[in-house]
Length: 332
Image 1 (cartoon, rainbow, N blue to C red):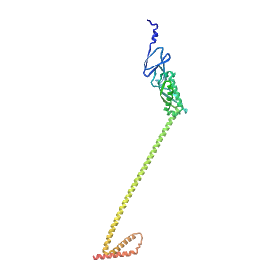
Image 2 (image 1 turned 180 degrees about the vertical axis):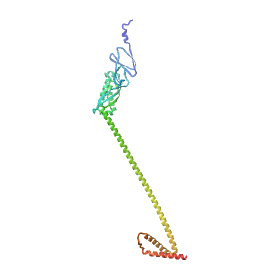
Image 3 (image 1 turned 135 degrees about the vertical axis):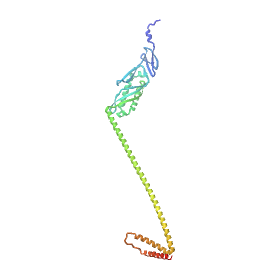
Image 4 (image 1 turned 45 degrees about the vertical axis):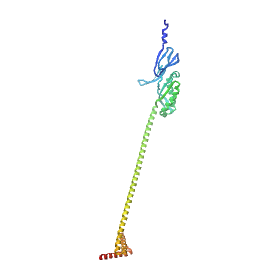
């Protein structure tokens, strides 16, 4: 049996498409969504099934040093997390400072059907949304807040983009600000301010060090004075104790000497009383005391010395006692 149109039959032979891991392909049949071709071997019917292309945007740095934005279309949709780098854009802060900011975005396609049919050009849409959101966020901040609040800006961008891109079947995982470049005059002012701040910190540290040194020095001097006063106190106490012991020893010695002298004097009087009698011995002792008193009186600076009248009797008694001793010696 002859085939009238073999070319028509050949055109209906299925076409095999191999889809890699972590990729899918949106298949349309007669211009309408038919199914998702997942990883593995998939059969497409010619003239009926056709893969729908997806647009990607890349920023590439060429060997000449120039950075260019490259747009690519592919029938394979990558489900892995991808990076979307935007060129620098000018934004204005709330204090009217114009600066350039470069943002980078990490996203992942979670619903390829929505990514194809809910937005005409996904790359342009997410780029413009990021730029406008960034202008709104930075426009509410001052220059200092913008430079010191990167995490806050990233969080607000992520929250806004995540809500908008969910309807596109895309999950924005992270948003990062790569560069924040103020104008040249602002950078110069900031450098001068930073230099002044560092000098201020250095002066404060120097003053704090001098203060600490002065405090330690005064504390050391106070401690030295306290220790010196304690040493002097201890020395005075020891000296007073030594003087007291010396006085006690001297008093004891004097008392002992007076006791021995009194005992010797008593023994002498007893000896005299045995020889001449008790009354004569008493007269002798009184006369001897008078003589000692006269010796002290005559030891002064006066040119004349007055002797009491009562001393004559005492001196006579001593003289009589002397004659009695002489007679006693002769008889013996």
